[in-house]
Image (tube, rainbow, N blue to C red; front, side):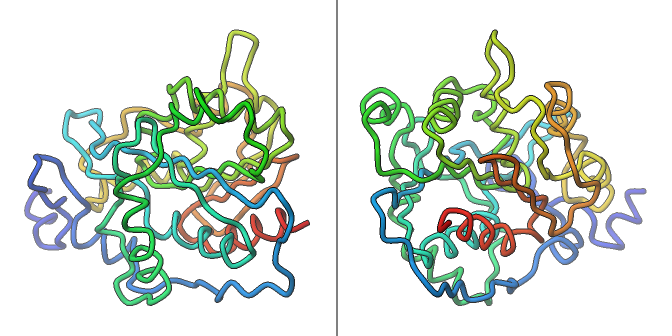
Length: 283
């Protein structure tokens, strides 16, 4: 198996901090130097008072797998970037926060190097990603009187599984968004953060239908060296156990709206999810 992995370049790549990024084969199969971003044109832009989107990002980099090896992750640049472009082109402003205000962790190995729109976005937001707001500070000092928000957005990447699902502030923001009739947007592994909305009274999204990156695909990706080992836990399994209904079985472009929850299945859904989210907020 080791010889075959080397032959097909399916061995995960070590990082300087002792973790692993995807193998050359996995990068070739699972990422692209360009995206399917459609340009984000909208006939009429939003001009009302609720023109802000609170984007909750992970600040954690390394995921410890079931075998003890660490996966170098964060927020996926396409899953985060394309919806941002759509929302901004539709007239919304994005406030970037992490749990403590530490820098946003980004899967740099998935950056589409030849996509001018995405590269420009990351250049424009370089300071915001390096110096985001604090979610803890927002909850403690701003949330109660915040009236200019239309949505809460949780971008994908395996990093959404780190820190966010058990973060009390994430849970408070999700309940606040629900109580204020705001939209909640979550893509790919982003719905993992919805687990924070479980309290002793129950799970906020019990009975909701949603699209999520499939556990079945996460179980296969170590074979091509995308992950350095089996996942420590499974997103769909945990969501389903709390009453969520996963509507997709593939890592495809499918998206879904249930009440005020908008979800997308995978990086392939990033453009469609971004447009759906923007059009939904415009309505």
